[in-house]
Amino acid sequence: MDYGILLNQDILSDLGNKLKQQRLNQNLSSGELAKKSGVSVRTITGFERGEKNISLLTLIELLRALRLISNLSELLPVLPVISPLELIEIEKKKRKRARK
Image 1 (cartoon, rainbow, N blue to C red):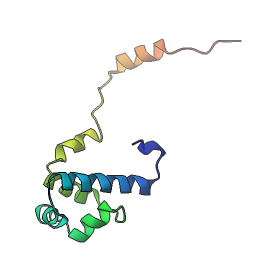
Image 2 (cartoon, rainbow, N blue to C red; image 1 turned 90 degrees about the vertical axis):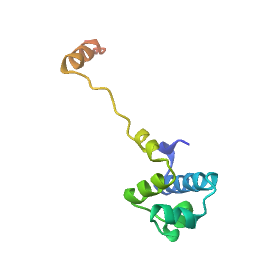
Image 3 (cartoon, rainbow, N blue to C red; image 1 turned 180 degrees about the vertical axis):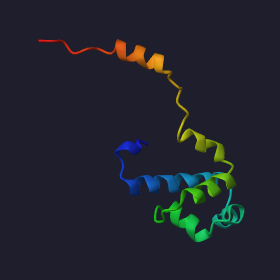
Image 4 (spheres, helix red, strand yellow; image 1 turned 120 degrees about the vertical axis):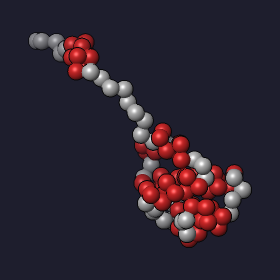
């Protein structure tokens, strides 16, 4: 799903739905996930329905309980470091605007 074209509320609903699918794939009830994560059933079901905005810490607790915490690193991948000399070379190779 292309989140770039969605409203924030639609993204929240999609994330909640994906969390619910992961929970169901692991044969966990919302109560069992609540017990494993320390997050209330009300918060979990509200998030799964796209009705409740949760904190990042709560999301981390849920992902950890579902053993999906390693997937979180894909959210903000590490970019390669470019040295100042490489940056100068890149700037030199950029197309220059023609003069009139």
